[in-house]
Each structure stands twice: as structure tokens, then as C-alpha cells.
Image (tube, rainbow, N blue to C red; front, side, top):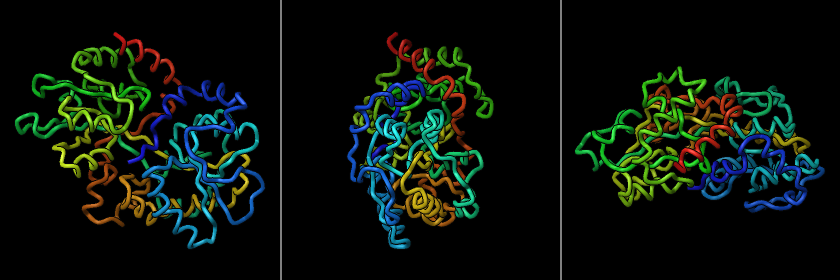
Length: 366
């Protein structure tokens, strides 16, 4: 399974970092991803270039979205696999290689701070009404298309039949013995919310985060944290090897482990949701086609098709009704699970990410 978010933490350590990277002209021609798209410029009317993260996720997008879109419209979809820093540099120089950007909503917010995205004309996205996208995932510059959930994974053979039900149980190493793993900021945002939930803060009262309290709670668990994971596969490796009995994890990873026969399960109580979304690059050569692809991709039936081939949670609540019961129940976004989790407060994190990350790194070093 490819990770739409792998590597972005290091590159997006605050909007100031993006601005500094964008100022380096040499970045315009580089990137850790692979470009399969021609350089941006005057649109030809028959092409749209979309940035996605490639890998298994990219293959799923091709099958569920890009190929059907081309069949319906005759517009060819070319894919650009490029990290945020060089892509932003291109946009700032007025030469974006892509038209449509599929990225985290937090990354889009940072792009907005650099005036790197077009302001959207929502009247051109006809599927918004039928898809019933949550209002908080529709901004002036981006629209949420899916989310990933960060939750708890545990070995089902570790606790004598007991099941952890909350983050308080994650912190309870007497009742639920064994080492733990939590994420490194290189993988995702520091997991302050989970510490606060473990300490009794109600889910709807998390923000603004009490940072001092969160770090005090994290310190109680510090000696039991064997490894801070910095990539999506690592929690599964640690659980599979029985190096830990519980770990925080990106939800889509659990199905992969279970298919491999690893005795693991997820607990979605207190799951942290972060949305992916679409935005149009400032100065996009094929903006009209980008609108068409965005509109097509947000249709409930298309979001459902993607969920059938990749563990992506549609942003459209209507999409879940178009899945079988088994397909629906496998997703953290299913109606019966949704209220168990919470949306990440991006405004809070945009203001505090840099300071929190610095403090986390100092804390982790002990």
C-alpha cells in the first residue's frame, strides 16, 4: 500500500519552510517522485495533469478514476509524482507542471499561504451537491475527497481475550502489558490528541490542545514506547514480530496485516481523521479540464469505486451506500464508525505545528 502522506512531514514543517524551499530555483527540476507528465505550459484542451503520490494508491486512482474519466470525456490524464517543495517552487515561478493537485488538506492550506492555488469556482463542481461533501471540507481553494484515520492497532493474542477500548487502555500497561509504538513527526503530526483523550479530555473539547498536559501524559508512557514509527509499514512490522503489543497506525494498514494472517485488530474510538483533497495549481494550463476531473472524482459512485480497490475512506457520505455491507464495514468512514473519531483541527496545527514538533523532538531525546 502506498502512502499519500509519507515524507510530507519533513517537507512541510511549517509554511515558512515551504517558502524557503520554494526560493531555491534548483528545486524546480527535482523531486523524489517520478514525473510521467510533460512540462506545464499552454493547455492543449485534451489533457489534464494531476499530481498524486503514485505507487499502489496511484494504480488505484488510475483504475477507479483516471481511466473511466478518459473514457467518458476523451481527456487524457497524465500523472505527476512530485514532492511538495519542488512543486511549490514551480508554481511560484509561474511554471506549474500539473493542473490538479491531490494532497492533504493541510498541505493545501500551506499552499494557500504561499498564493499557490487558484480560488475555486464551486459552481463548476456539479457533484458537490449530490456527494454531500461535509461543509468543513469545502474551502475557497480545496475540496476534501477522502480521509485517512489514525487509530490504535493491537495484537488480539496478547491480552488473554481482553480488548482495549480507548486511549486510556493504550496507556494502561498493567492491564494491557507489552511495549508500544507511536509516530514520529516525520510520519505524521505528533499524537497529542491521543494523550489528552487518555487523560480524560472529551473528544469534543480537545482543541485548543493543552500542550503541557499532553506532554505530561506522553511522559508517563515514554519508557514503554519501544519505537517511534516514521513510515506507514513500520507499525505492522513491529506488531508482526511481536516487538510491541499496541501501536498507533494508519487505519488502512490493518486490513493489509489481517490478510497476511497477523492476529491484529483496530480500535476506532478516538480515531484522528485527516482529509485529502483536490486543488488547482495557480496558473494551471488546463484548468478547465482540472475542474472536470475534480467534478468526476467527487461523484459518490466514483468515490465508492475507489474504495473498492483501495482502503480510502470517501468524503462523500452518499458513497458508502453504494458499497456492499462487507466493503462498507471495512472502512473507518462507515456510518457506524464515524462518530467514534474526530477531525483534526488544521487551523490549530498550522499555527502550532512547528513549536510542537520542536518540543516533541526534545522530549523524545529524553
